[in-house]
Amino acid sequence: MVIKYRLSVLALSLLSSVYAFAGKPEFELTIRQHLFEPSIIVIPANTKIKLWVHNEDATPEEFESYELNREKVILGGQRSVIFIGPLPPGEYPFFGEFNPKSAQGKIIVE
Amino acid sequence: MLLTSVIIVIREVLEAALLVSILLSLCFQLGIERSWFKWGLLGGIAGSIGLGSQLGYISNWFDGVGQEVIDAGLQIFIYICLLYICVQFINHFYKRHPLTNVLRATLIIIISCAMTREGSEIYIYLSAFQSLPETGVSLYSGSAIGLGIGFSCCALFYYWLLSFSPSRALLVSCALLTMVASGMMLQAGKMLIQADLLPDGQLWDSNSLLPEDGLTGQLLYALAGYEATPAPAQLIMYSLSAACMATVMLLRYNSWRKQKVAEEIS
Image (cartoon, rainbow over all chains, first blue to last red):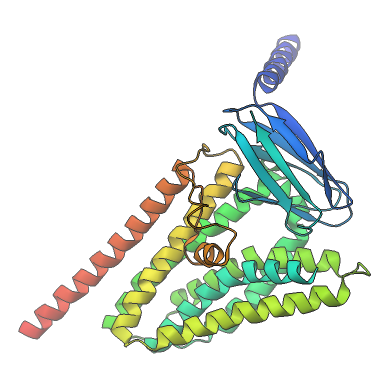
């Protein structure tokens, strides 16, 4: 009974990892010294992606993009997820609303 | 930092303050007492500090999309409350009665929730950057200017609404509240799409016609949730919300009209 349970848990976790792997592509973005690193991210067209934003600064930042229709506050030291797309090919700028002069970047869809 | 603070504060203040000015002026026109305003204001300040200080914790809810879900939830809740309030305003216009506790509580909740959404971001921004040595004065003076501009717009709006006759004010205010409430549903849709709970897409791009980050675009954003590149799901939410609110109010209005005509005949 216990073995069966463990096997099913294992099968489920394997399935979920396969799903995650076959699911949305993931991309990483870091905020450091009020700058986005990398400042340019290339993502595939017509695909929903998961963008992980890690704010390494002590101060918060708001990831904002009019073109992408996204806005999310990421507190200092926090790592947050933002779903983006599916998008047609093109350039989609984004910026940090709290530091708009320095924190700028763009997503290139191709 | 000065200009950034001005822009952040204006953007956040404008939406909630427009809503407050419509509700305050309409209450004045309909002879409804406005003691709810100070409680709503207090609730909004408490809510802003509460949500702002707990945002890190809330963000981790629902697999990391807690921020979006809470924001969407607040906006949908405000929409429902505004729908109720508009019907009550129409009732009040035809048959005046003292402010009931339910109506008072709804008004307080609307103001508190609307302020909490916007104020929490200002709280996060101010509390994080005030400690930095290079920001101090420009941060606060920028915020004060932003606050001043936001309030001035709303004072203008308030007095513009007061210039109408009560029946016209009711019509204009209900139309404006429908726009604000449906705009909130549009923005709730945006948050649910961001959280991957609704499908994304782009119906059109009106940025070349009316840029979303321009002055008119921002004002329209505050008033009607203007979006230059809306997704189909957002437009559906907007249309359904506006149609539902308009229908409910028209039905209410018609039933009062019929009742009045019947009273006049008898």
